[in-house]
Image (cartoon, rainbow, N blue to C red; front, side):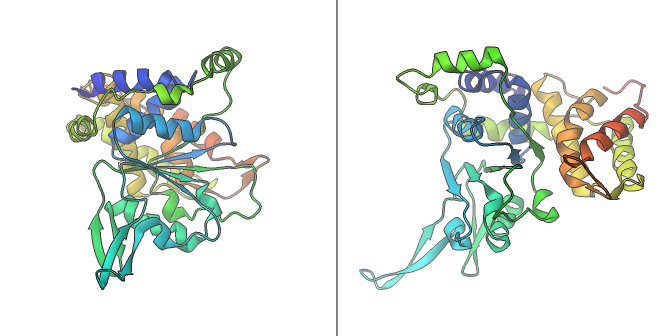
Length: 313
């Protein structure tokens, strides 16, 4: 199964549950194909949990959910060695992080110590328990959620952890037509219960490997570098995107190209991904009326940085 077939099957299946969010579904699938993690920043009740569950069921993968609260401990995430009285020896009890799709619900409600327990898991694909490292299942992806409106009793994610998420996006409210579809579809049986497996976890692994082979020529690499440098030189930005952020933008662009059936990246792929990859990685000197004005700055950068026009395939 090639990336385009994989995307078509998976997106069509998820769209039966999540209505009117084709663009957001495309970005999330592209992030998974790029071996990335997703941060969904949205108000409650917009389908974040349903989206994560629909992805897990569609690929036939294991799913686990962690409800982040202030009293959650790192061992509640990674696992613990406990003394088994029957066998008179220590036994490993793996935590919910040992899964394929992990939903980290309201991640900003846990303490920084607990949040940091996910850092190694997200970056290294392993968990360390009592000094011993254990590999996580493959594929492994974290879909984290947070409520940007209610901030009382929350712990904002530090820049180091935000940088682990390949994209940050919001599902937002559905339009009128989609809301009517949702009301019609939620009868006696939840649509999620009727969701079937249409691809496999092995298919996802194969697609992830194919993404690396998507060509990014020198002109496009130069465009990517120019975008990164622009964020570092912009006087409105205190901290531009890092090299890791630039690599994330390239991987997302390769993923978008692959699921659209191309073996090479074009500037439009980068422009599609850039707002979702870059905005949570830059720190602005000033904040707008409604919070960070990173969206507007990134939009200006995309408008002003020259786009390569030569043959790029």
